Length: 270
Image (cartoon, rainbow, N blue to C red; front, top):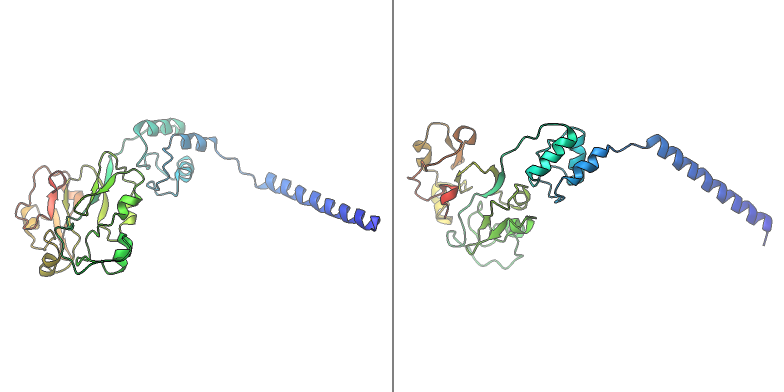
C-alpha cells in the first residue's frame, strides 16, 4: 500500500469535508430566518384538526397566516370561542364572534323518492357512481347515497340514513367544507345556521323529466316565486334559487303551494 497516496487521499477528503461544512455554516448564517414566536403560541390555541376549513393546508400554515396578518383569527370553523379569545390576546386584537356555519344537504331524493335505471354493481362510492353516469339513479343532479360525505367528515357530523341520504348533526358540524369537496354532485353547501329556508333540489331538467326521476324534485312551477316579494326567490335553469342576501331568516313557510315539497324550512324537513 502506498502510504503517501493514502495520506493525500485522506487529506483531500478531510479538506473537502471542512470546506462543505464551512459552506453550510455560511449559508445558515446568511439565509436563516427567525420564526416569529407567536406562531407557536397561536398554533397551541388551534384545535389541530388540520381539516382545511380555514382555507389553508393545515393548522400550522393557518397559524403562520394569522401572524403575518393575511388570515382572520376567526377563520377556523373548528376553534372554540375561548381559543379565538386566546389568539386575540396573543395578536393584540379584538376577538369578534362569528356566526356558526354548518353543512346543508340540498336533496330529498333518497331511495324511496328516485327512479332507478337498473342494478349498480360497481365500486360503492359516490365518485365512482357519478363517473359511471349516476350508477342506478336516473336523476343526474341528486344524492347518490354511497356516503363519500360521511367518510370525509373528520368530526363524525354526517351519517347516512336508511333512505340513503346524509343527515347533518348541527352540534358536531364545524362547517369545515370537507363534505362539500367530497360530494361529486355538489348538493352540499355551507350556510350560516340562521339560514333556515332551502330549495332541497339541484335538478335543472325540464319539469316533466324532473318529476319522472324524483317525486321530490323542483319542477320549476314558480309557485314559490309568486308567494314572496320580488327578487327573494328567482328561477335559474328551471330551478328555484333563494336570494339569502335579501331574505334573511324565515319563520313561516311562504311556499305552501309547492307541489313537491322541494322548498322547505330546515326545521320541518322530512
